[in-house]
Length: 459
Image 1 (cartoon, rainbow, N blue to C red):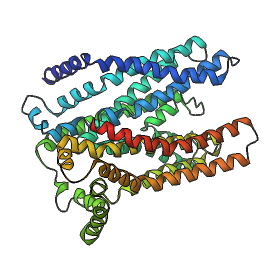
Image 2 (tube, rainbow, N blue to C red):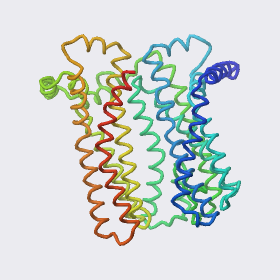
Image 3 (cartoon, rainbow, N blue to C red):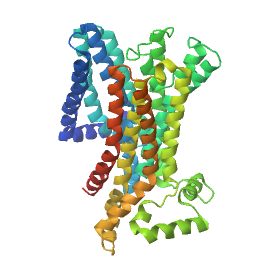
Image 4 (cartoon, helix red, strand yellow):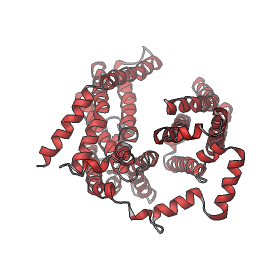
């Protein structure tokens, strides 16, 4: 009975995906994007490098990029699948049919992941090119393909699970990121704590603590290439199996809660629920909230509309402190790996990327929600001009991101100064110049994203 109800949903979603041109464009585009880092690695490695070493470098670089793509796929593919149905009021209509929660989620999973799965199929042949160059075996390519498919399944399941918790698409996105981050990092931190207590990495307890992490699966795969772990192949397969079970558990929990969330309002939104407390903390309450409202309205009405949540800047600072805290812990435990200039450069690149993605989301969300709800027409019928709306949006973005951006620039500037003082080779001098160029590009990129995001939200 379950398959009789579920397969028509999957069949319909597959037919709809086959008629979309983006399904085929994504496959070709992913292959072309995958060729760019391969060409770049080939150029910087030099033609004099051994073919086996070059093949291994190409394989590792492309595998890491594909793993990051698979791990974050759920944030933009499935985190708003169910939330959009709840906002539009169509989720309850689906339960008037013979479908249950699991049937709906599987249909959403198939429809959302079709293009991503095609892209993954386009990446695997690129990985196999390294076999012809040497240094990589067919078994290693197969293990990485299993890793990428399993990680993507977990990420998509996490997005569906988060999407069932709230009708707000942005909150569902944040919940997906938090869920993926927690599942990936906390098991590794537990293993590091086990090591800090003078338990070696070969200790079976430390390995068991890290097995639930998708990042640990990558670490002990041919991409990580760490041969110090005992029984690395069995640990890799065990980690894959555990992550796969986590994905199915998230799907089952989401399918269990979905019918209740479709028809009933959660008790957590009651006057004593956690959501009510969170809202009061975010927006403020009492006289403080009124003072904050008057202060923003006196400057710009749209500024108040876009920055009503008083605690938004704290979220950015929390992200920065978490990333820096994890890096300090890793640098203290493994200074030879995490305290190197190359790792610091990569850390700055990651922080800048997260800031830009978050900034783009904040630019788009206000105007996008107003456009869908019809509030934008009401807003344009007020005495507010387009220039005042743009200035209010810019003021809200400065309030949330200006201080964190200056802090990141300060850290990168300190890194550049330290590199220049100790630059005894061409590589370190080049790396410091690359960081300086990134510092210059960060404010310019955010300025460009502000206008591009507003245009994208309106179109």
